[in-house]
Image: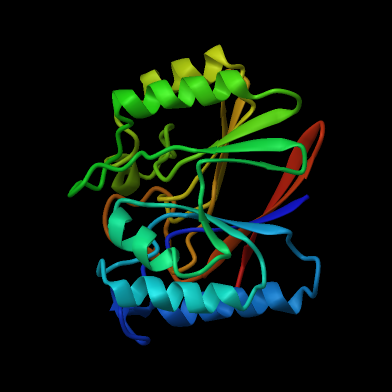
Length: 245
């Protein structure tokens, strides 16, 4: 089973909107064209892992939906710190292929979405009720492996600009993950690709669709590549590749 991960689109209400001088919709167009060029069967579904919008507008979410519709795939989404979840949910509800990621079984794996966002803040935190729900969902996983999907990175990646706004109190999250012997966590937010691990649990961080921050940056340093990830999941594990358009 093959999953495409898209994250950190940062779209505006109108095409041509620019973030730090970069046309974010044009970057999304390049990524989607690269995916389509792989031909049918390149992916079975999409994980959309937050920061779809930059300006919090209904128009930005509608542009995202219309662009993603061209893939002809189910898209499972979570919100990021730049998103307004009620607006995102209301717009995306008009498109049957766009589905909020709560718990979904795909290819023998169970994918569990976690809300790590705090309104008005760039850094993340998982509320106690959300953490309790995560523990319950992990305990309910039957046969096969599980992966948790959230927006914020729960391990530092060595880029201070982003590590300043990573998941706060991440030890609470990791206790829940390790108690369940979770094998995999997937996130975005970092605008860069990383494959890390913590006590036997892999953390896969996807590059942004719009642009990347340079590794190690503590100020605005941009890498203009538009990125995405392709996962291949098997019963006994997974493989992942970062790709750039």
